[in-house]
Length: 82
Image (cartoon, rainbow, N blue to C red; front, side):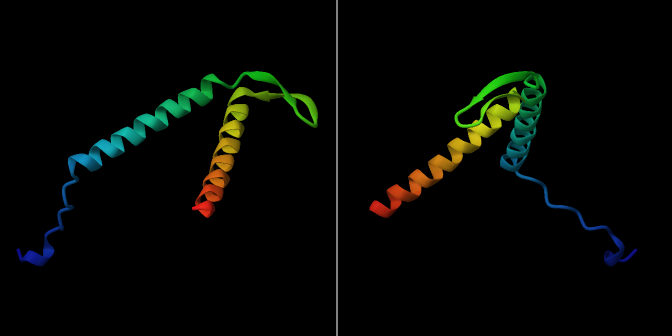
């Protein structure tokens, strides 16, 4: 057999890459469980739109997104002052 017919071997992943992948898988599992366990409906009082029912996970995700947006703009504003 010639050397060109052998299948190439993939480089071995480093321990850091394996740990990162394992951590991301664990985080995905925890996030999925969190979402599944928080499907119950809660009453939400919207500031200008009255009140309604929404799944708890939706309320949590929307709150987190609002926090991310506010943080982004606060950091941009503080960077302009420097």
